[in-house]
Amino acid sequence: MSKIALMPETLANQIAAGEVVERPASVIKELIENALDAGSRHIAVDVEEAGIRLMRVVDDGEGMSAEELELAFLRHATSKLKNERDLFQIRTLGFRGEALPSIASVARVQATSRPRGENTAHMLVIEGGKSEPLRIVAANEGTTIEVRDLFFNTPARLKFLKSLTTETKHITDIIQRLALAHRKVHMRLALDGRTLFVTPGDDDLDNTIVHLFGREVGEHLLNGRAETVDMRVEGRFGEPHIARSQRNFYFFVNGRPIRSTLLQKVLMDAYGTRLMRGAYPYVFLFMEMDPQLVDVNVHPAKWEVRFSKERHLVELVIQAASRALARSPLIPGVDVVRETTSSSLSLRSASSVSPPSSPEGTSIGNVSLTRDVRRSQPVDASHVKRATQLLLSTFQNPGSSAPSTPSVSASTSTSASTSASASTSASASSLSSVFFFIFWFFTYRSRRLARSG
Image 1 (cartoon, rainbow, N blue to C red):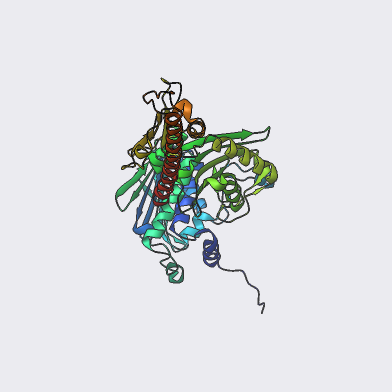
Image 2: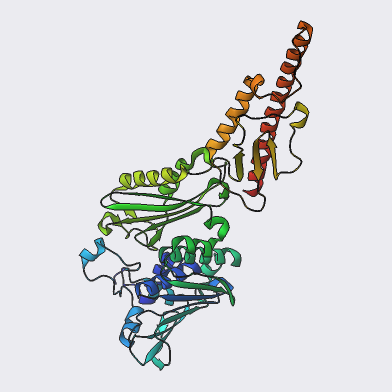
């Protein structure tokens, strides 16, 4: 008797599920990708108990007929590839034909679909890989897939899931990535009956980022772009002061969200010393290229890709990041205002130059340094440099900028000597106070940034 035998279909699907269905977020990713490939313009996702109890994805795509609905849950059945040449120019998100049968082998699945222009919908129920006969039902155009009791028949897989909070974060993250990649599609996510976010579906990147991450992130992004004949890179690069302790890198290739440790390292090098130690910037990087220059058939979950012109791509990413960061303020949240009504700076006495009692602002002579606590405003670093130069030049030439005082008669050398000596002493004292203020101000700013980071 032969020791080698074909595995049962159910067992083969469960093994494939070990690669494709890592956690509830993996199921959400596959279902949304299928909805996007079907031409959906509206996608609604409902999740209960971090997806372990229920995951429901409703779309208004082209739908499936009764025959297509049954074929969709057979292994290696796909509408994306027709021959081997298509594998090297993939433009769809899904193509392997493994996701739906793998999901159905480790959960209770109910799929309902109605093709566009048809009056009849069909429903297919599969439990642990075993399907029931098709039923005719009433439903809207499009497809609805419900996945319940994930890993109910593989308890060993279930116990390796993280906490509900962690699994929910993974689900939120993957939907955010897909929403950023497909901004024309209106997406909604509801967790345990509560709507978490809704995207506008207006194809506006900046507006979508604000809806997903809030104005604190959306209003502090820098645009960068670089392109060649066969490749284009466009990104939004977060200003250094909104960096966080967790990694916030969002990479997309031809509308497909990917992960890349190489690109993360390249971007961290581009930011360099602009970031505090242990802080990571917000980066939204979109790469467009000929499908033949990228291999997406690398990872079963399609997270990793290979580039045929990797060095060329890295150079474009560096160019785009450098152009954006060149406009980044070195001291965020500080406005430098220089009065132009006088030709020179008038200095206060040594006793009047002291650290401000409030972080909202202070001034030295006609140079005002203000801090708007309600909303930080970017500043041109050249203003700070210019203000410092003016202060130093004032102290180097005290006679031209000293405060106006009653004229001193030159009738006696003793009076002149006393006046010169007093002027020199006051200038030195003022210079010391100014340098003390500068030291205090930047120490205060660094502490504020460290707490906010």
